[in-house]
Length: 287
Image 1 (cartoon, rainbow, N blue to C red):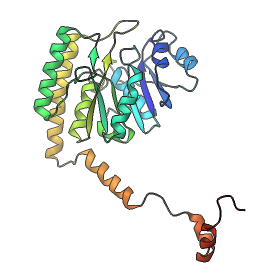
Image 2 (cartoon, rainbow, N blue to C red; image 1 turned 90 degrees about the horizontal axis):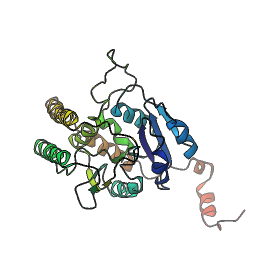
Image 3 (cartoon, rainbow, N blue to C red; image 1 turned 90 degrees about the vertical axis):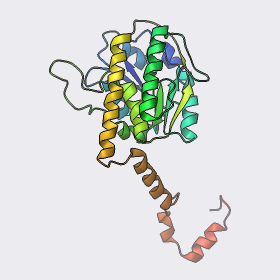
């Protein structure tokens, strides 16, 4: 299982985050956005096997896309480096995935969830954005704008993130999907592609050190723009007759089942039917 952690000057927060990573995490991907402190050195000191990736453009969206591309685990979890998302909750996300969900998002506003950080204004905005998405996409999201998610690696193509090899814009800006809109974008695309989406109650903590880059009004309007952009995209894809990604996944799963659980052991061709019968009756440690 892989955990992706975007970072930018988070050297003081990483000890807390790494300490709370559960034992079931086998791969940690730290995606650095050009830190000028000791973020990378601290990550390597805390976990010698950590994989450090430098993002190719600016923004959290690009950082996540770079991290997903570097993952080798069957399950990918995305958390924040500032201590606001609790890595100790990862087993709850994994339980939902192994129970049948394909994409699981954290929620601060359902059973088991809470926020120590959100203001009344941001909560009001989040509720309004939830209502818009749930109306347009017939979903039941309780927390659209929370960035704690987990999913099977095989569904990454369904998210259709901007190609990490594309050059940075000349004005040093971001491609659409490179910024904070990424969290809303992937949540909506998971639904639009008919993935089985579940929610897990999660506690959001205050950032331990440093200051957040979020701006309530600017980022709120950006999320609203993302919602309508994704709605238009989903309609275009339906009109073009493109099947949901979940349909291709189901076909592939059916093909794997048809092949049987195990391939034929090629060594069997060395034995005759009579020899196989003799071998099958021998004790496990006979020579």
